[in-house]
Every structure is written in C-alpha cells, then in structure tokens.
Amino acid sequence: MAHAGEVAFQKVKHLTELAGVDVILVHRMLKNDVPVSEYVLMTDAVHQRLEPELRQLSQGLEHDFEGMGRTPTHYLDLSTLVSSVPAPRPNVLRKLWNKLTLELRSLKYVLGLKEACQGFRNVEIVDEKP
Image 1 (tube, one colour):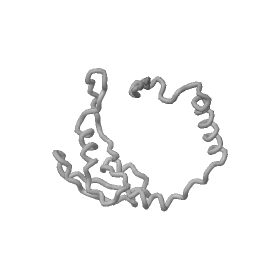
Image 2 (cartoon, rainbow, N blue to C red; image 1 turned 45 degrees about the horizontal axis):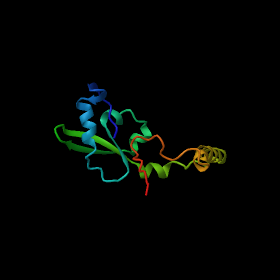
Image 3 (tube, rainbow, N blue to C red; image 1 turned 135 degrees about the horizontal axis):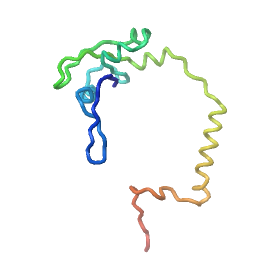
Image 4 (tube, rainbow, N blue to C red; image 1 turned 180 degrees about the horizontal axis):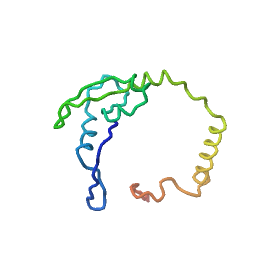
C-alpha cells in the first residue's frame, strides 16, 4: 500500500501513534479488489510521482472504501515487473562473508559458552528437576 498525505502524531501513554484521515485511508486500502495476489496498490498522489515507465505498467481501479467514498487507485502487478527486470548475479564474496559471519556468531552457542534464548524476557525457563 502506498499513499502520500498528511498525518498527525498522537501520544497515547508512552506510545506515539499516527492519526488522521490519510492514515485511515491506508488501512482501508488493505481491503481491496485487486485481481492479482502480488501487487503494489497506490493512490493518485503516489501514481503521479512514478517514473513514466512504471506509470504505464500500472492498472487503474476505483474502490469504494468504507467511510471514504469512491477513491481512484492504481496497482502494479509485481509478477510482470519481475519478468522485465534481470535477476542479479550472486556475489560469491558476499555469500562467503555472510556464511563466515553466521558461523562466527553461532560459535559461542556451539562451544557451550552461551545458551540459546538466554536473556529473553518472553521465553519461559522450565526447571526440570525430578
């Protein structure tokens, strides 16, 4: 979902939330009638800012969002974008570096210097004494 608009910041206890009509619109955009499963749905405000090549690939739809009325939207079918963009070639050095850093980070667990989930507040520790 993509929309350009105005938001207000609303403080609720210790949290700051986004509020306003444009925030509600983005939430309403989640319930839509786009006929494909992988897409980017956008309002006119975003569609007008796209590069001409992307704008030509988009399809127009009009939605009736609850409490917002009829709203023109546009979507990009991601499956058509993927087929038109060449796949990046894998970088062997980057893959090797990622593998090495993963192995080094997990070494403390393999050697028994640290236990998995140690220090997590949401993991319940069960003491198994017979």
